[in-house]
Amino acid sequence: MTTNSNTWNPSTYLEFADYRARPGMDLLSRIDLRVPGQIYDLGCGPGNLTQQVKARWPDRKVTGIDSSPTMLEKARALKADIAWQSGDISTWTPETPPALLFANAAFQWVPNHRELFPRLMRSVAPGGVLATQMPLTADAPYHHCLEKLLDTPRWHERLRGVPYHEHAWPAGSYYNLLIPYAKQIDVWETHYHHVLADIHAVTTWVSGTALTTYLAELRAEERQLFLDDYTDIASATYPARLDGKVLFTMRRLFIVAERNEKS
Image 1 (tube, rainbow, N blue to C red):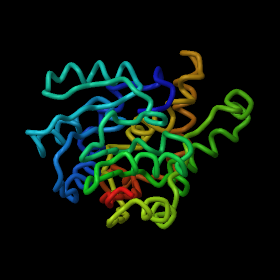
Image 2: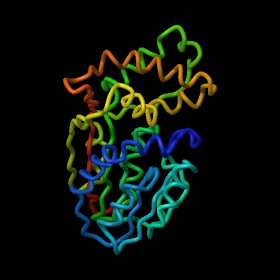
Image 3: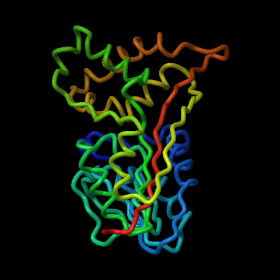
């Protein structure tokens, strides 16, 4: 992860581990590595998906990169045959060209995509792959709920100026950024409708990602009030279904780009 390194709570993030990992597994299934070299998982978080990367290519060196000490502590506890490194992927560059740069739900936390994507693509070995998945948050219902919350009298001034992460761009924009360095690009979008227990589960999910920077700005006694207010707003957006559960929809963009021969 690449926001403030002290904002991430691995336990909250992993509460929906299977649902969060599913897009990463879908991304992995579309990657075909045909060149030698090592693999980096950028923004590896608690390392559960990095383990799946290692399982897919057990004979390759796999390194997880993250800026959060708490996430890396959780990852190191896995005792896996994986190297874990602290690093900010907004400036990170591999020492040698890798066969794969893998980033699951990480790049949306990194600014300046216009520079980031070409720089990382150029660092990949010829024939290697840059593969990423990002949630498309600009029109996401849970993000609109956050905007409504931040516009309420209670929180408008209190949280004014707290930065939010960069929204992912349309697919065509990334295609244009990467194609000068790519032999071929596979790009697609998927809507995931996650079945959650109730509206409180929606708030718990969002508190592990989109709300983290705001919660970090609040005093302990303010945080539950903030979450309660979010739940009240979100309840209209995520109505209970016939069985009392709610559908939490995430739209995600996937990119698998194969590096061309270097000029």
